[in-house]
Amino acid sequence: MATMKCAVRLSAGVIEFADAERIPVPTPGTVRLRVKAASLNPIDYKMPKMSLGKFVGCDVAGVINAVHQSVTEFAVGDEVYGVVQFGKSGGIADFCLCEAKMIAKKPSDLPFTKAAAAVVSYITSYGALVDKAKGGMKAGDTVLIIGDYMQCDSVCMFVCLYACMYICMLHVHMYICVYVRINES
Image (cartoon, rainbow, N blue to C red):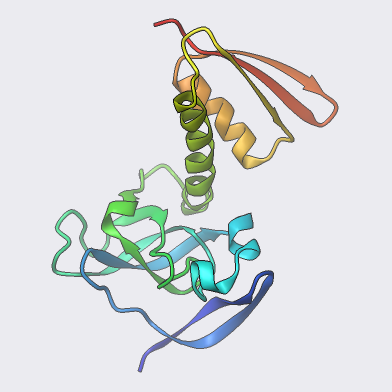
């Protein structure tokens, strides 16, 4: 039985490193990555074992080293980033499983470390803006984003910029206040 090193969640907030976990084998719809970089998010250490499983790390970037025969869009050797298969794998490990639909090919000029650091932050920021929009926002409305130079706050500003919203930033001490006005068009 081939083994690997990985972070294992014992309970909420209690994580240890194990060196004899079995290397995962791809199942239908998944690929296995040789992990090059992973990031640790609050969800990784705040959630109980029963919610996310025993493995730690949602965001991952690496090189595919095994592909299930049902996966046709990726091949061994592809450099990718994305989210691990929750409950069955973790990014803070030598190897992890990812559902093919939850990864993307990594741009060649994007370092593995930056790719792994972006996924959950962008999903969280985008979701916050989109969910708020579904809650009744319309063209001309204003959103206030208050942050402290952390990942999600910064990402939220970039998502707003990308979406062609007007942004006015006001720096106050160590905090960023961002006023966003939804474009009329």
